[in-house]
Length: 170
Image (tube, rainbow, N blue to C red; front, side):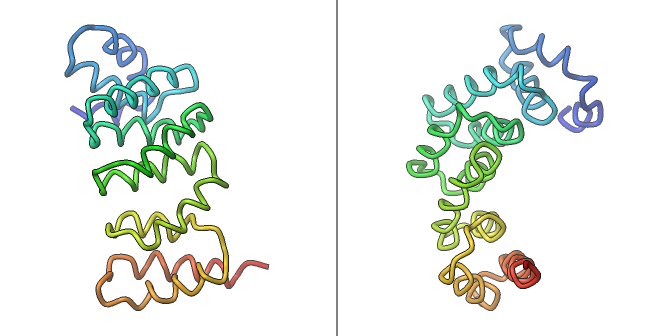
């Protein structure tokens, strides 16, 4: 079903918005996915509520999608919560979604937080951090280390890509 909804894109929005209030948890989840992926600013309150619900019930995986959607929409009201989630989540895999969401909502704040992400235990977080970390001497040094780290082969390309971008920058 998610693939079919993704294929429909914005044409699925009216039905997705109806599903949110339907009382059917499965349909509401499908609706939230559509809003996160293709919704507009009017859908921000629903995504923020979904993020808060997921956090309150400690369903960290469920918090990832609304975090990404809020970032895609650049919802400034989500910044404090995304920072708190980055700092406090017990689900390390979710940090990548929180960093990506924060990048959309507050790029400068994400660039600072991404510095910490370069040392994360999750390769997906490190990959996201490579693209977002604020350019400093330490960050360039860490990117060089990650580009050759035999324990993090998944991160090599992201580190090399960022190093190339930095080298090409004026």
